[in-house]
Length: 281
Image 1: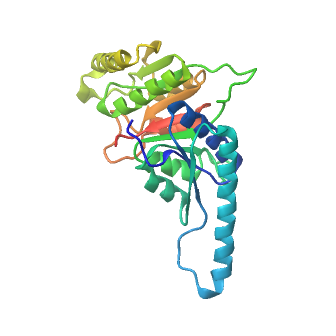
Image 2: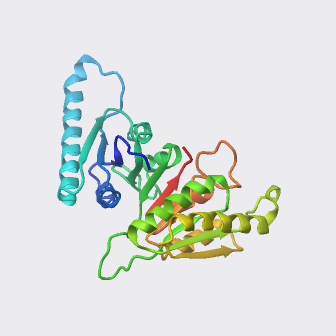
Image 3: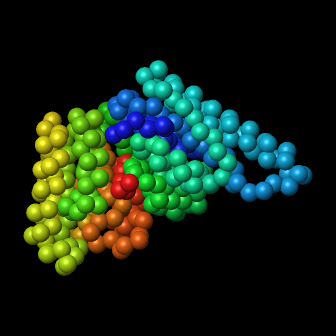
């Protein structure tokens, strides 16, 4: 990809989930040879009365301290191998990350941040960023760190042969290359729209889509899985053994105008590994 102003843009609020996202982002920036930018939004951007100016300044100072901690943490992890920048902004964290995402190679966020209500499957910031940020978004979920009791599996991708899925397939091949991991490409036929000629046509388009990317990444071992069941079930099964799963923001059956399809939302809510959601720019 072309060089971007922010490189990997990581949302950080000091929570445990954002620490995990930052750690993943450092590794990704190092692997891709790009910069890392730590982003923190410190207070809603609304007019402040003169009497509240002191509280406003205190909140900003708190935001600066949180961001500084995140930058130090990223620098300690990078050990000088990654240039670490920072962005401090007032207002909504989701709006800040979406607004800056056009100048980033990808946006990385934790699945839950501070202040999340118990029982919610996905935090509001990560949900909004995954739905609205252009390009690539990675939401950190589940296991990803190499450990004695964890052997990284393949990178999995959901594909249906459509133009909308191409960006997700391209990203997944890049991730498999960086990790020296096999790629598991999954196509589920149960929700095939009749207007596209049914299951045989989708399976053929899927095969051609994967074959094109194989030519660009001959170093990647590709496993193909064409399933008769629904996409959500097939992809969650694939994610159970994967170190990362990548999906498009919506597939062939997505309703025009929807920013996030039901399959990608299911991955964000339930996948046991990091989830990449890719929008066409």
